[in-house]
Length: 267
Image (cartoon, rainbow, N blue to C red; front, side):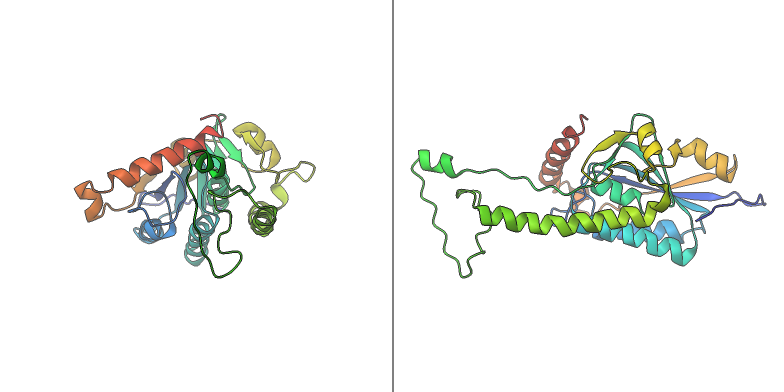
């Protein structure tokens, strides 16, 4: 989508959406990013005050593929309906699902130290079968359906479970790849392997076509929309539970998960 700015009497406005943290389901009192929590904020950003553009400030190591897809699809739908260009600005990291969110933008900008990529699918867990055996703990599970106890962490890992998990990963990976190719198109370096889960710093990501340039929010928006541009920031509204402080435990759990994912990228 091309963008132009024609000077006029009114000051142009750019709506700024901060997309930060792990992309997760909505079952933890609003902890993590998900479509349900972000939907009102995204809708307001595209609708209030006729913005000249929407800017996404992204700092996410990824998370749920489904929620990544839903959030990105919502941004694209509104951008196309309202004919508003979208710019993504990567802070520390836009990796895995975080990069999926970045592809919702028409243009992706990064800092030289930003990390981008990790276009792949991962599942991780722990196995406690030996632990409970050493402590004389007997695991009792009764199911109807042979796959109902899929990847039970308290039982030895079964080869058939691993194969089934890989069969789920493969189509998810292809969907992710299709999203990147559809949004980045001919910008991508066809001579490089971009979809094996690798990640790169900002300047290299630009060379590979995963980003459009090295730039920061304020100077880039002033360059495009003029020195008088106003930035209007949107964030999730604080619900009653959050105001009362009853989501402290969920937030702590989310922070541990986010730190774990960030550690994969040396952050």
